[in-house]
Image 1 (cartoon, one colour):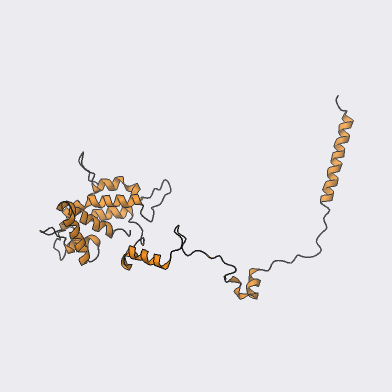
Image 2 (tube, one colour):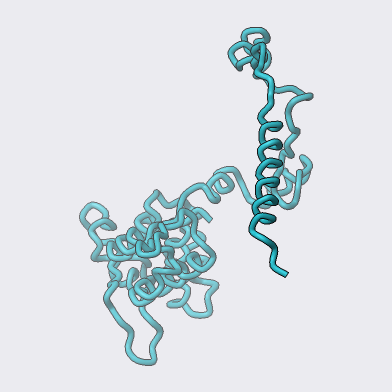
Length: 249
């Protein structure tokens, strides 16, 4: 049976009346008669207690001295790690500089006589130039379209790619050494190796861009003599010197 219009109207009026009463009761709040005290400002707190800004045992967190996964090391463990890393001149150099920028690597290679545009014959290992051109992403070149900048530290892939490039570039550098103006001494060309296949101190100095020590020359000669082949030893020696001179790892 349908309800009459008058019945629906009465019910609606009753609901509106109840809603109005509830709303009026909710708004029936007394006005504040006094101002609530405000919290003291930092200026007031510091003025009353000059030591309020200093940390102490009761208001600071005791952070761990070593936040690495291994946790805090004992003094003996720290000393053992230092001995393993080597003397201070070597230890302080580790991780102390950024990686060689990709563009700078190209400049260094070209200054040593390496052709970046050269390609290998079919079936032959790729040249240093090919490795450089094809390995720029691994070396950490900036990708502007992806908003990715050049990383500061070399990745494992970048370090391995750099070693491959130095290894392939070594033979070109050995051949070009005597024609490089920056490697000449008193206007005279300097060969990388003498007639006895021993490393030339002046050539080593040019490679590492610092005066070569007896240890530098000794390590260079050792790389040549310990290799299975003299020519391979020369490549290993030159590549190792260049890689060590252009990385902090």
